[in-house]
Amino acid sequence: MCSGVKANSSSTFVYLHGVEMFPESTVKRGRRIISNHHSPGSSVQATGGVYIHVPFCHSKCFYCDFYSLAGREDVIELFIECLEREVRRVAAGSISWSVDTLYIGGGTPSLLPPAGVERLMHALDDVVGLGAVTEITLEANPGEAPAERLRDYRRLGVNRLSLGIQSFDPAVLDFLGRVHGPKDSQRTFAAARQAGFDNISVDLIFNVPGQSLEQWQADLERVLELQPEHISAYSLTVEAGTGLAEAVDAGEVIMPAEETDYRMFTATRELLTTGGYSAYEASNFARDGRVCRHNLHYWRIEPYLGLGPAAHGFDGSSRYWNVRDLDEYLRRDAARESPRSGSENLTVEQLANERLAFGLRLAEGVSVTNGLGFGSSGAFRRHFAAQLQRWCGKVELSGTQLRATPAGVLFLDSLAADFMLPADQQAVNR
Ligand SMILES: C[S@@+](CC[C@H](N)C(=O)[O-])C[C@H]1O[C@@H](n2cnc3c(N)ncnc32)[C@H](O)[C@@H]1O
Ligand code: SF4
Image (cartoon, rainbow, N blue to C red):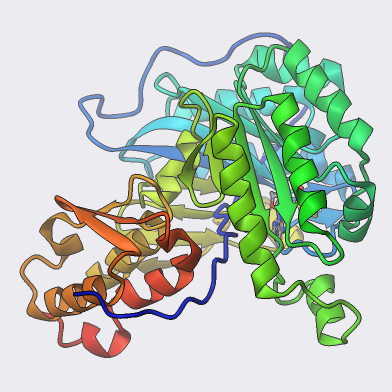
């Protein structure tokens, strides 16, 4: 018998990332640089990714708290050199999994000269082996990725482009402080197709102050006309320390009501699934199976190497993070110090809680085999059974796979919060 549950948040913005890298112009264009050798230990087991964080942007969007700086393009060449040294000094020996995805994110990676990307890929291939990599993504901003540069990236083996369109509506783009317009998005998308990208992802944002449901639906219809292979649709989140947070605190900006957020979130799922896309993650949609394999590593709590300032990495049991500040990152390189500034071993409870929080957002759900690592622990089993009862109808357990139901996806934050083992029970768990 199910008990009633009160809804709260549909919060759809969970975007993990964190790293960087960069170039120099000594390398020939158009040469693929991936060798045939695989990562150490080819009989291996786990697969994982590599993330490179590029901390440069032409201008800083006032809602964004990803680490990036405007006006520092002068150090891009130096940055690439440092990143290459980070690969050769730090990455060597720190990977025990087979690398099958590379993600170059930011910031604005399309500001990187192709020769720099090539240099980094060479270093990675030398050190960790890119022979088993099937997906290489690079993030680009509309209007900031010229056609020739896109062709060069493609020739280097970058096979997936993530384009930050955000909206086709000039008023929404203006509110967000984006420097591109709708025509830039159309042009960069077309140039990417012409450059040979047959796997393009488009980022969109909804829940923007002043944006109506109709405006959002018009954005979705425009993106459906483009037929990208993948769409990420994020609800605008007020991140602490951003200009948006200051404006909200000062009463200068009023965020839409939660009800508006729900309605836009629901409309997104309806329109995109009707349009042939699978909602394989709460905010991510793919057609023809073109899911983002790299992000799936994050969501399935699989390992990844993080490189560059503000980058995070995970080796399967502990997380580490690099210094955030670009100048400190460069200083450490010059002093031959590691960019890593901290690490944390994750407990069974923390790993289980992360698996639950991310897994419930996935259409595939999360495997609760072996009690998510708790085995036959009484406390966990009692807690889990109570939450299954409490959230009846919002989650389903099929064999050992726990999933949010279509009715449950509006409650993902609450579901995750409730299923995670409370701190006061963790100590007595075993
Ligand atoms: C950090 S950006 C990097 C890629 C590129 N520079 C761009 O802007 O598209 C990746 C995505 O995060 C989104 N994003 C950043 N801050 C956000 C926020 N506060 N709420 C929702 N989406 C956000 C961006 O709009 C973008 O789609
Ligand atoms: S949203 Fe993208 S372009 Fe804007 S500041 Fe963040 S990383 Fe840079």
